[in-house]
Length: 259
Image (cartoon, rainbow, N blue to C red; front, side, top):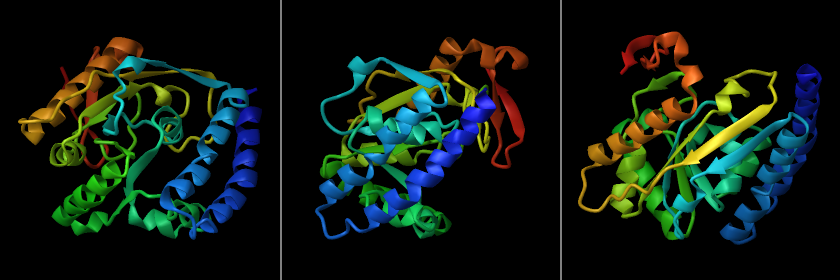
């Protein structure tokens, strides 16, 4: 059954996304906040199909930790699911994304109309400056900023070195960090066409304050909470590795176990 559901979901995306993206592109004369509201309405629509067609539900724990004002979200990254769902959980939200994505036909054209943080990853250290400059502007406009500190999607039970960009932005902007753990990769794996039904648990951690702290300490606290929460909530992900996470190198190979 999940095979048929996955095929139908793919058809839904093909039918819905191009006209939605084209419509989004045509919103360019409108104010930025209105463009964002119109274009990101795609997320709850698709999330409805994820819930009712794919059978992938989700529940949030720790919602009381969500602050009243915008903050930097540092989230686990396992699938495409969280790029959709976080927009529903933390509106209005923008992402740090690769500038090349804005050139993707239809999808990128619509994405370009949403206030976001588009960076050139080839810029090296200048990419961090781009994140801070654009990120402070978005936070000042009232948007949440979501960052995936591992840099790319990782399989359940694994992790990568947490990059400091999100923590650096939070420190420079003077806003707190909100750590987020979840098990989306258990049902929606990286680059997998077929998705399996189940319940995703999204855990929102206590605010991490940044005032008077070093960036490395902020980043380390976020990493320790996220990885600790992953192990607490989803111990079955780590059983094959003796109850610890596999730490992946930049090439995607296992480097060392995390104790």
